[in-house]
Structure formats: C-alpha cells, structure tokens
Amino acid sequence: QVQLVESGGGLVQAGGSLRLSCAASGRSSSSIGMGWFRQAPGKERDFVATISWSGGFTLYADSVKGRFTISRDNARNTVYLQMNSLRPEDTAIYFCAAGAPTRVAGTYDNWGQGTQVTVSS
Image (tube, rainbow, N blue to C red; front, side, top):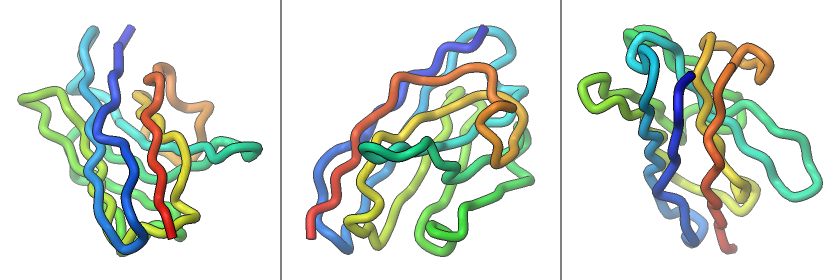
C-alpha cells in the first residue's frame, strides 16, 4: 500500500503558475509510476500527466501539453506537477495516483485525497 498526500493547490489568476507536490510513503513508493488526474465539478476524472519510476517516460493530456511538466524526486519520494499559463478551464481538484504510468485511471492502485486548483479569469 502506498499513501499519497497532495499539496500546493490554491487560487491563481489566469496566466499564472502553481506547482503541485505529491508526497508518497509506504511500500516501494519510489519504484512505481505516478500520475496526476483532475476532476472538475460535474465532470469525470480526467488524465493530466504521468511519469515512470525512472522519470524516463512521461505522457501528457493534449490539453496541458506544453504548459504542464511532471517530474519526480525519488530521493524525496515526491512527484511534482509544474503548471504554467493556467487557464480557467484548468480549475479542478487534482489527484495524485500511484500505479502503472498510463492514461487510464484504472491502472492506478492508490490515490491521494486531492488538492483544489482554482484559476480565475
């Protein structure tokens, strides 16, 4: 079992930046893929980005490509999501997940509680 705790969310104006963090603990947390998903009110949970355990493989949703960057520091058991050029449509609860690094939520076994990101226009 892997425990995940997100932080770094908040309120930001359009065009601004935020960096989300996800601290992992538990069984072999540095040897698994990590992903970020988001869920806006009344919508399904959508894939944002994922990264392999080594950091050598990353994948992004088209809607965030070129604006968001996922990275990880295995020495700190932490995954980051740097979000730049934020738009109002990026407003959502952002979830960190641990599992196979794919776009599919079902391939992740463990989830954090989420952190709210609100982008004002």
